[in-house]
Image (cartoon, rainbow, N blue to C red; front, side, top):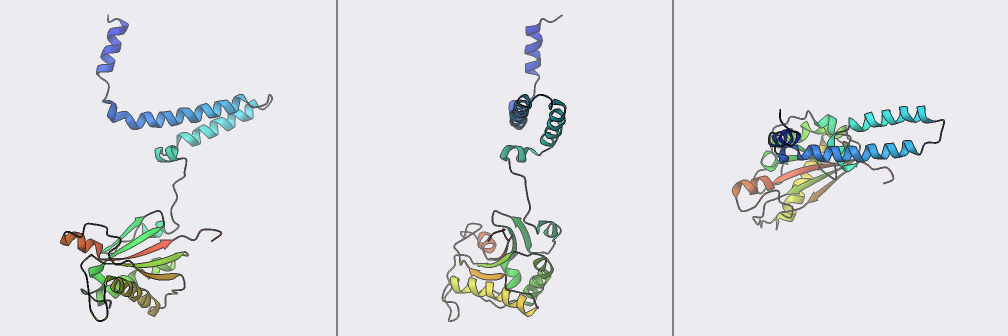
Length: 224
């Protein structure tokens, strides 16, 4: 027979590494705090209301225990922008979807839309923009079309700098949507030149990633 201290030592030596269970410790800490709060509220319940309070406590505890860890840690319910369900199935080559603080971003590879140094949509580019119309029409917030370039300077009669080029490309997308009958009253065109790179401009791959047009879909906030 092993004494208690020996059994305890063996159990400790066979337990998983602490790092593997770190998330569980945080989860249990949050649950412990919430349970303590509910117990305290139950203790403060006036006499005669115990049964109803017990029921309410159990319902609240069940709801809390079923929440995701991220929700418990932040105290904020995860929410979508209102168009995310429609975008979850979006499958257009060269178009990526991401969720950010300001809303949902549809990112289009610049090479799909324009020839180098140009701001006239290619046939392929027109097709890509038109494929987004149904999704954009289902969205009731503000839409910002934003042009981005790499850091290589441009200096032509039409585009003295990347500011003019990025702005003209954003405008070209908006104008094409308008020609297709899309209501552009909720849209704006913005040129950022090379001021918001996604990758380093030191490599050809990075510069290619930085040359892009983004459609930022901002959900309308009540009171605005």
